[in-house]
Length: 170
Image (tube, helix red, strand yellow):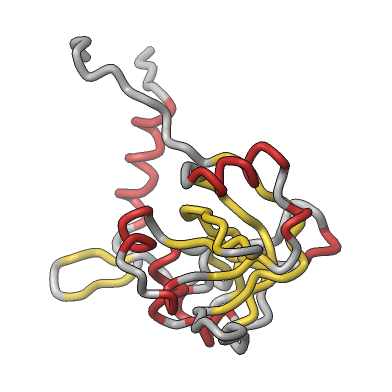
C-alpha cells in the first residue's frame, strides 16, 4: 500500500478542485468574507477577546496610505516608539522618525498602557513595539501634525526583531 505525507495529499486535493478564479492563465484566490487586514472591504478577523470584535492586523504603510479605512477600527500595528516631549508616538521606522516628518506619527493616547520598560526604551529611542488599539484617523495632533491616534490601547509588546548570527552556515 502506498502512503503519502499530508502535504502531498493536500496538493492532490487542490489540483483536483481546479482553478478558483483566473486572470488569463494565473490562478487567483477566491474572495473571502474576512481577511487579516480588511482588504477588498472585507471584515477583519475576530479578536482573541470577543468583546473587542474584529481586529485588523495592518502594516504601518497601509495606515499611512488609507487612514480613513481604519478609522474607528481596532488595529494591531508595529512600529518604532519614541517619546516626543510628554507624548508617546509610533513611527514606521527609526529612519522615518529621523526625517522629522511628524505627519507619519501615530500618538498613543494613554502612555500608561505602555509597559514601563518600553516607555523607558522609547525615551532612549530604542523601542520596536506592536500595539493593539482603536485607530482615530480624525486626530490630527495638538500643535504637531499627526497621522492619527491609538485610543483604548489594550496590549503593547516588544516587537524587536531577533538578532541573527549570519556567520553560521544555514
